[in-house]
Length: 632
Image (cartoon, rainbow, N blue to C red; front, top):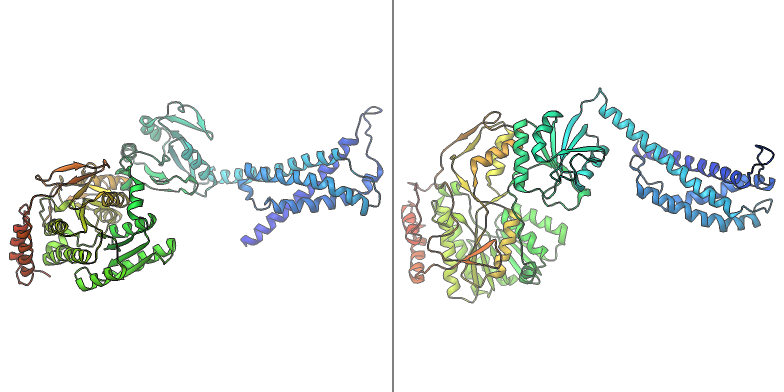
């Protein structure tokens, strides 16, 4: 049916173009030979031209149709006819004039019954009128179709959504044109823009009402249903302001494009999410250093199917590694990241390997086979409450799994080993954090006695990761609540996954061995405020439409996380988003002995001796609620 309509549309357009040739040639002949004589009498062309008129129409129509097909004049969507379409038609018409001129001579000498030729002025006038009539016809169709669509959209028989566009710049202007072409029943009423030079003026016929302080007034005055933010570079403060105003006015808020959009043509209108509200100043990376660090090298990523690990895979591939080894125990995750990278880069530059970091023989086999120069160790158990239930698994995986990979790296001459750590390793209140602190100490110990450069990168929560509180809250909101928060004063650092991974790579490029790099996580976010923001972003009012309840701290949780130990010396780096912690003075002979003792405690039924040994290794470990039995 769609194909038939398209063919019918093209056929009607071609019929109109034939008429344009006919009427244009008629006008051109009459204008050329007409003059005022004997009052208002017209003197017409010589009879030979009228005798040949049908031949001219046929001949010029064939040339015109051919050129219109070549220049794509029949491929345009008439409802969206633009300057580009007019330019193509102009090119077709004037190339046609050249062909008319030269080929008409040949026609007059070989085909026509009378050899009277058309004068060049006639063909010139005909070409000008032909172009004019063709574009008038196409523009008329566009006007009629647009008027028809607007009549049905804005008539009293349809329900319209009145929207306010926040941002009258290029993105806002393009949004209006996109809404005009869409099937969505919306009516843009005004712009809001902070540029005082635009206030009171009109953009695409829509008035700029005022700056952001006038948003609330505009929503009420025009009874707006929705505000669309059309500022791709909108700051966190701007978005929070708009969210708060819209929440107060019970008005929906969406955005045009994402915070990283540069291609407005492909941008779309979507919901604002919490990542937008966390947006900070852009990260300034020494890209040449990262490229030099990664490009042409063989890189292995443990835990490569996880949230951080998979993003590491994407960015390491984009920076030009020669070979990527993705190592993980999660076969489904490996399958997905493998397919994703194949679609973008093909299958030659990466390999997926199934295995556990607890299996030292398997790790050694893989490193021996592929000979990675760099290892990013992202494999770990990270879920705090789950590790409190299964504390021995945290030690087996996070401590001894790390030691396994580190030993294999040393034995096979790996150049750099970067451990992905966590802010929960600082003064840990849970076994997961303590296990990561021991992992940090173990790689610092191994850095002292090997040619491999070991370093760790420490950061807090990442948005969108497996187990993140954000999708958990979103699920609760979608179900109508309540949203559960553990404590009204709980705070956490947050960072987006791509931002964290970029900084990890930059820190890895700077590592000389023994450092613990700490990423600037910005200001800690109050979890209660996070829940309120997410409820507002969903169009509800906290504790009115969606209830927030407090459940109390879970085992091993702290009200806030720290990023450095009191006795760690902080050094600046060339990146103002990364600081370096010098190694704390430590007796590594004692540490080795304590690690051996810790390993023996894993064979005991009760975890109490394991907790005591962890406390011996990490004196700042303050476990508030030790398990009485091993629930593994």
